[in-house]
Image (cartoon, rainbow, N blue to C red; front, side, top):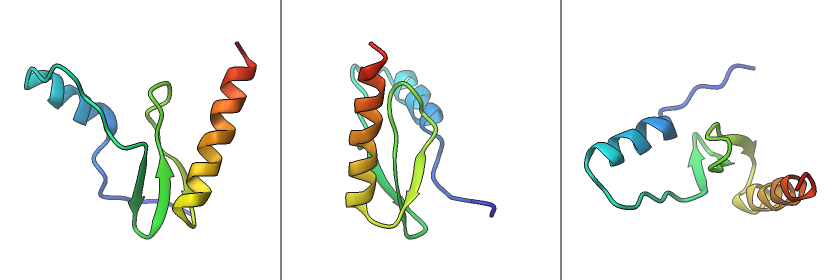
Length: 72
């Protein structure tokens, strides 16, 4: 299954924000693309997903955070 989206890559948006001399850049962790939900993290800018519902993406992010904390 091949996934395509029109979502602009996060790293490009961060670079553009820095180029505009924005002091602080923040984005929503969750987004919907083509009817599926995804989340992003600072550590890994690649979208995680797809999930059928936002609550599923929220649960997956919680699981991701718990996993990352277990390595610390």
